[in-house]
Image (cartoon, rainbow, N blue to C red; front, side, top):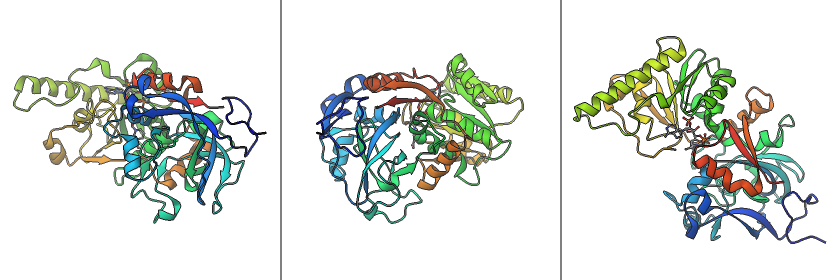
Length: 402
Ligand SMILES: NC(=O)c1ccc[n+]([C@@H]2O[C@H](COP(=O)([O-])OP(=O)(O)OC[C@H]3O[C@@H](n4cnc5c(N)ncnc54)[C@H](OP(=O)(O)O)[C@@H]3O)[C@@H](O)[C@H]2O)c1
């Protein structure tokens, strides 16, 4: 007889669907830092599978900033957002945008996977299959597990069939479930934005080189024959970045004057800021071993670094950004933009085709998943607390749900 819930680690026969499951939940009254916002609760398994939907038994979930942003409830109240857009009416939110697992049940019109298949979940949500006009680009992409409820931090999750990509057999579960968000985002940031896409020999500046996305960016740059210089805040992270292909390192603790640019009329502070930029630019030359500025600056810390990024990128070069870990307010000196004809480019996750290309690269071992720490499900809250406090080891950490 089926049990109504299975413990984490307990074997469940393929296709058996209990009524309840364990999941990490967020609720409005708890919005805050991970320690406050996240709880493990017993909730209903989402077994109401539509014709194009798939129920997955999650084996591994990736640790991701989306969980932290969702838990803070600002700038987006993820629960009210789902209700307003009629995406989900639950009073709790299950976060998690990275993961891999086993197909447990499929809708009547699903053709790309079968029960028992091992899949990686891609988190670019384009609506229900019947709503979709064009699938290969990303016109109205939503971050599933952040803007769309029912993410990977649970024993079971319901996805659209196009979110399932077969897991290459060469990847372990940890490698498969921990890095797609970072890998695909980095891939698009570096390879999509022509004519500023990465090319052989290009000097590239990568902020947070040991981060989830930074570690993937270093490897993609290396694979393309470019010259990645990583910025870090500790010696351990410096060693890590070198081990995965950074040709040079800058420690950001050697610099001051981060954050918003001072008022241009405050001559003392403005002069200090210019001195900071000059020193940073020379640190880049030294790390590269040549007096050349970066043609691409890979941005994601945001407020703390953005003005420096635009100042140091080469003429005709591009600052490409996907985040604002240190704050959302980015500012810069407009003269830098027009005089040197620089480009500021926003980039958000990746298309379905880009996800597939990246999974092929991972499967063929042309880039690695850079798995950092492997947590147990009971430690999911601590894992995200570590991430919020910038205490993660290098690479992408994961949570095992089996
Ligand atoms: N839009 C998208 O599709 C998308 C996709 C993936 C990620 N993201 C965003 O990208 C960001 C990074 O994600 P992740 O998973 O790689 O995070 P992560 O692994 O936690 O890494 C964050 C990195 O940022 C650096 N950092 C932290 N505070 C900083 C500061 N004040 N100044 C400069 N650097 C700082 C840290 O490096 P050091 O301390 O060593 O310098 C750290 O390694 C997040 O904001 C995430 O939401 C966006």
